[in-house]
Image 1 (spheres, rainbow, N blue to C red):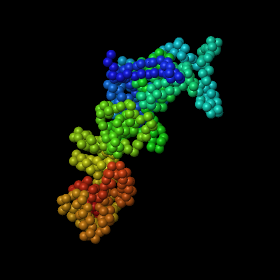
Image 2: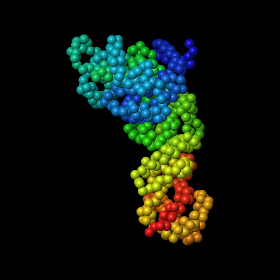
Image 3: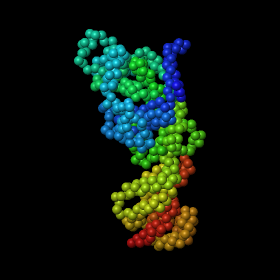
Image 4: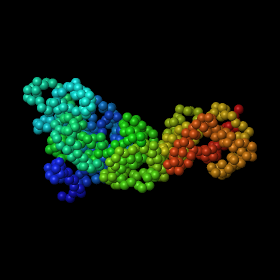
Length: 542
């Protein structure tokens, strides 16, 4: 038998010299099967996506299969259309499944609520073998146990009362509502975590027997994930580290069934920059929210892997690199995943998006796609204003994109307030409300008509010479000119420019980017013909 990899799981007694049993497991890369098993309780967020992505990278790097399974046994938390949204988000990110609810496979159904009969059959198997029992404790009694634990400052746990019920006790409870609990036994619960190394936890010493089948006939996570992983031939389970304390419990379930457990890898906690846990309650970190903001899927992929490891780190840590999904697959190494909590610098996502935007604009197809997208964004933003004339020519759009590439992180920013001048011509009412010398504007217009070199550097020189020869304070000339060609009053513009310059300063601190557009730059962006037209409109102020 030609196998690519061997895995040895050795369970040791407390006396390390005595080996209780040796369990040799082997698998070939082609036999690798992993699953992403979310609960449909809301939108996919960064934490869930990280789990989905790392499972995908591991499976595809081993030539294995990737399965989507929906764990919807907690019916009180199920959100309508969550499964459809989840699959749409993952498809947008380039994550495709080999088996799942939409494309099925040999081990379906892939929605747990459709597998209830199987869980009940497996539970009966544990009852028959003496590894589980019926629990008749009421919710009131369980609540009293919790309160007593809080009073004594101990960890709440079930006291296993129903484990020792005799035949007479059982007959007295006949007809009463019950759940099924699994009997935990004293064991170190040893397993080899592919991220954290050797891990052991004697769950029976710190927990009471867990419920595996609820009184409504639905399984708990502990039973359902073990049964499904076995039945679906899952070889590796990659999930969040919050499940690591439960893994020893799951190992005991595997042993009770007489099954070999899969290999486990627990992904470290994602935290905010302030050290708090990244939570699904942060609505702005959902995948759908990022899509709406104009974030590229490639940017999101590379941003997430930059936080959690799994790759050889580039020594030039200040640079942002965008790697295609195929390259991420080929270079993924599970042994390089960080075991420490991963800080997620959400403020850096923009730099990844900017890097992908540059890639898009460097290809004919990407540039055409981006230009069309920008056109639609501008149309949608200003569609209600029938009084404006929008310049949406391909030449103008391409010129704006070329100018803005080092200033923006995504193209949605080009319709923000400080960039309105690019698309909207100043209204007559705006012009009339401004205070300026019409004679100076007329002179300036005629002067600029004769300027052939309409570049930033030359315009800067021309405007300084004009202010000097006409005895106008240069700063006053700039204020007047900016107001006329942008259509914004100085007071509003000042606030917006301050905000823009602050943002530009932050970008500059990261990668030496330029600051906000000056008057000369605005003139170049609009072009000579448009600047003259706007000055001419100002000359007609009556």
